[in-house]
Image (cartoon, rainbow, N blue to C red; front, side, top):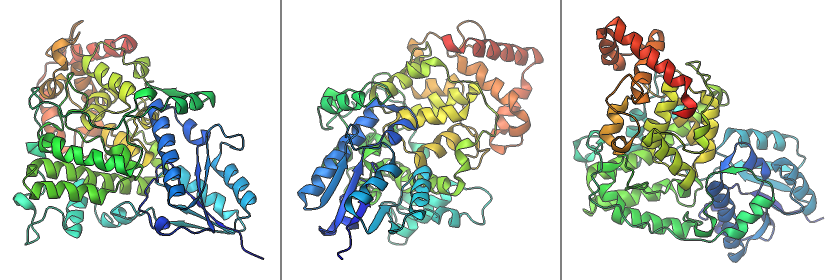
Length: 512
């Protein structure tokens, strides 16, 4: 009797046409792409995120078919769709009489656990293969830090630079004589040089959006379905990479931390969605950036800063995630429990920087790292917002957010909820930093210089109140010595006024 075909599962963030699976078309292999309510519903996602992933999956299915592969694509509104990964796999294995099932290792723990548990119950052969995307294997970062008390990015980053020969001189030393040019990449943007043109493709996904709505999927944010700007496939993502290398990278370094009401993109690449869905790979992005520097088309500080985000930070947080899961997403070392204010779903707050960052996130499904960390995350940490619903909000709202990269960034880097396993100190600031890096304070309802009073910027009193509340835990941190010296210099009356201002601010948090 002829054995049944092999079924191969392709998840929505595994859209890599260069994977080894596709080197030859085999009539005994069927590729499965499944649009599932299981995946739209585990958190509330941004409308553009759902549209982008489904549209990209459909485009990938078309590519595979055109290349001669057998494909079974199950749409969100397909009558045969069980809406659960496990239930669909059971039905499809029975339908095809499959003899083998294969999948690429998922990057989210919940899917990895689900597939492994499901596979353990099967009578046919089941096996997982590598996604062939990352520089490092899942457990490699943990092995690197095995004998180290703290997991510092810099150690991981330098090791990977050396291993892969990135930005090294002929003697194996870092180009420019130093590993990290972060200190050169902290300028506010004056409006000149101008923001590059947005050359991303345009798509009309109105029909797909109607399908998503008809299927009952609950989303947040603006769909922008009729004028959709996110890449659907590798060719579009590579064109976007070329555009960034030409017009964004030369100024990326200077203004990567800048905040501006005049531009939501500035000089950022917007490649994170294409990278995290594996349309393009980290190696080719890093290689093109380094090549641009070697050809004199981008400064070293900008190139190194961009490469550090991909070769360094991206690999590092993935290693943290896979080592700390599954309990990591429940981290709440500071015991914060305050609910998220309603304006997290509207942007309707008088704090101009927060209104801009959240409003932009709802409009574009995107915000850059300083908006996520030092505006939204900063306020959340100072205000003592519960890190678990905040984590789910970040996971849902951003088009590039998948749990392996989002959870360490939110719970570790942003909220210090892991107690300092990832960040060496809480990343918080008063209004002074926000004013230095951006232009929102000039048109804000609140006075950036005032600590107390009706018009005082909420960040100011909340900043000092946070360090008062957390003194027992944080006072011994050498990176916070200056903060506590300044706090200790204040009079008892001044400290009490700040405590009262913070309490009043939090009491009216819904109407700030």
